[in-house]
Image 1 (cartoon, rainbow, N blue to C red):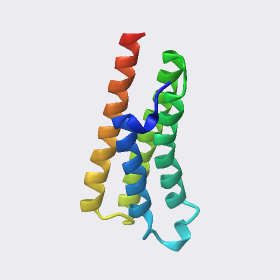
Image 2 (image 1 turned 120 degrees about the horizontal axis):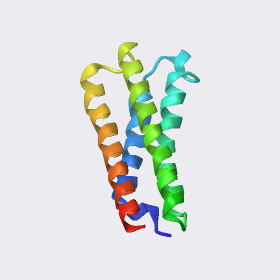
Image 3 (image 1 turned 90 degrees about the vertical axis):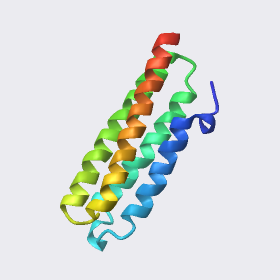
Length: 119
């Protein structure tokens, strides 16, 4: 078991969740329980799953949990596309945000690979 706060991937995912909250703060009021809520909930699940995975004593279980975090990343990626298509997020704000989602997913995949090799 390791302290998830020391993991670079968790740190990046946490910053992504914070970015998501800021990015969605100006969504239309009617989206409070719609896309805004979905994006925030999904973004928070990524670092939460990393934290959960870090608490597992078994690499197989950790890898399974990290796989779920990757899936949440893909879901967030789609929600961001939806938000830009609905003009909730300007394209110039979406692109670096989407790039960061992809980067976090790549880091998660790398972390999974390193655990699989070690196990």
